[in-house]
Amino acid sequence: MDTFWLAQQLTKTPTFKNPFPRRPWLEESGAAAPSPGNTGIKGIVAGGITGGIEICITYPTEYVKTQLQLDGKAGAGKQYSGIVDCIKKTVKGHGVLGLYRGLSVLIYGSIPKSAMRFGAFETVKKRLVDSEGKLNAQTRLLAGLCAGVCEAVLVVTPMETVKVKFINDQRSSNPRYRGFLHGVTLIIKESGVKGVYQGLAPTVMRQGSNQAIRFFVMETLKDWYKGGDNTKHVPKLVVGAFGAFAGAASVFGNTPIDVIKTRMQGLEAAKYKGTVDCIIQVWKKEGPFAFYKGTVPRLSRVCLDVAITFMVYDSFMELFTKIWP
Image (cartoon, rainbow, N blue to C red; front, side):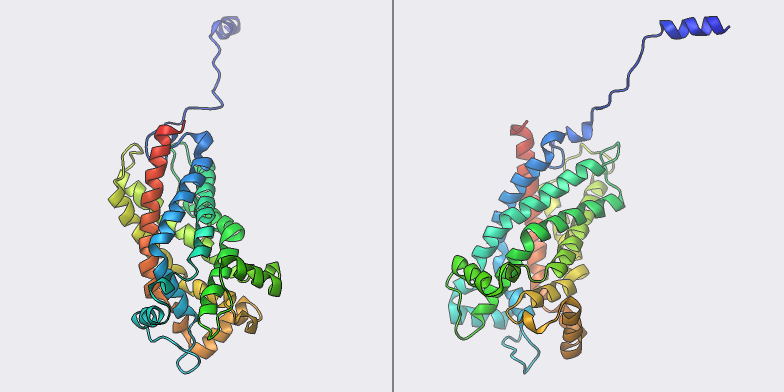
């Protein structure tokens, strides 16, 4: 019996398990399905283009949000009574282009920021998907968190610090910054490199939570729409609607962090000993509602921002899938 069994084994055609199995979910058409080897690179390029387009469309709402967050309590240097008042006074004092003050900073920063965000997300996602090409709840949050932390450390913190200082500078009676290069040079001259890295901790917290929430919501809604069929196409208007919903979720989830980040990066940041001291001072002097200053303009901007971002990004990724092997 043993001899017969041995003969059977020796005459069998040997089989070997392919260490690099075919992954059809990475080969399908659509924004989430470029070839595995180029996923990160395509994400970087598509993300960079997307960032430049998006910021040019939505910047005025970012400007108003930042102005309202920098505004003090009534009677303590408060300049604006609300969104409309902020817009009116800005246009009256500086013209319509005043609403674009600091735009150059975000253009220089938005391209690498978006490139880093999507490149990091696609790279991490590729390594976390299961055998069916899907992310579970934990891995969605993790991939988004990694994307947010990467963009915060490498791009967002210096970009946001300079942007807030530029907008804050315009609030003074005698603005000092004559342009992007002059402003950055002056900041570094007076405060050193750390002058453009103020508020790193709250920025990492904000961007990490932002992208964790947004990518989690987007991936969840896309999976729900596809109903388990990874080859099903998601229309761009649907992607935009999902993006707006994801943006709203992130705003309500982390606006307090955004307010603290803005205070820590303003020209009066020196009055705070650190992030915790900033939180304590804002709570004591302005009350808990101060942590949600700028929520409405931020909500309008972020919903539009995220909707546009995911629609444009998906479009470029689909294009790259067709023309970029």
